[in-house]
Length: 339
Ligand code: 13P
Image 1 (cartoon, rainbow, N blue to C red):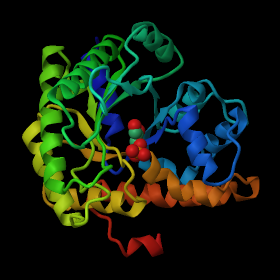
Image 2 (tube, helix red, strand yellow):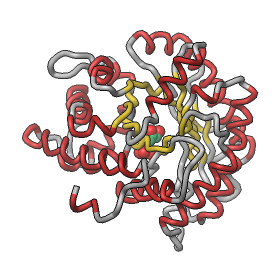
Image 3 (cartoon, helix red, strand yellow):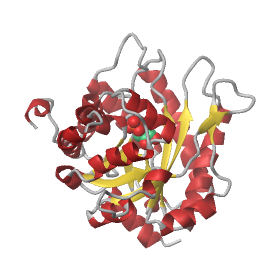
Image 4 (cartoon, helix red, strand yellow):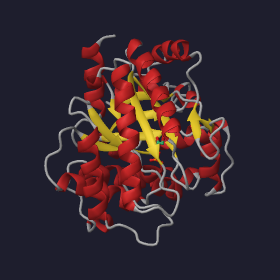
């Protein structure tokens, strides 16, 4: 393990004014996204879509790194340049999703455990050769009646810690992503309580597994009302509760925090991030690692049509820029129409 290299990579991933594009949708998930624009999901349509995002020159100043899917890591631009080489050349760190998805946790109805540890050491060695400098593993915690259980929280935290150890052994920065879902009727306080418990378990397992916090990035959910909760907390309440929870649970040595968007609208995800910075200095770099909230506008503008390739890039660049501003607390809602 080379801590200096891990730390340098992690710092580049959370560099000022920039954040991470999560473009690591599995073939099943990207099919759902393409269904919304009535586009057939083929190896070539997926490649074209990713090329549209990665080569949007006006977005590149705001994108520090890109999370790729196994298929995408092996694909190339139309000009024949492998995506990892293209991204590196343009100052964006290439990364790879390595988990194999959340599967039902035996004995715990309604809960899941993320799989993918078997053979991970060998897969990481290959990914590193293909150019990946960081990895991502997503654990999923659902809030509902009687869940999450402490057992499911701890099992997922242990999975994250074992994954992170294998990454650091291979000089790959682990993005540690414990996602508390926003599905359900629970309120902000319940999300805060669960997020606290999850982060507490995650950091105690990371400590036990001897993870170098300086060489990892945390990708948490924001503390937010469930999407069916009758009273939706205000953006200011979300920002306050999220910062309070992270300050209680995340050691200052962690190289950076990059949020998932988790189903928030693009404008909400941008606004929440900006308000967190507006509330005062934070002990870690805090930025975005959005999938849906960064891609939604671009996907709709592109609509799978070659004639709209440049339009998709413009929409992506606008959203990337607004998030870049949010990552330093400089976003205003009025910029939505101007940018
Ligand atoms: P969302 O921002 O769409 O939640 O995706 C981020 C991600 O990488 C989920 O694993």
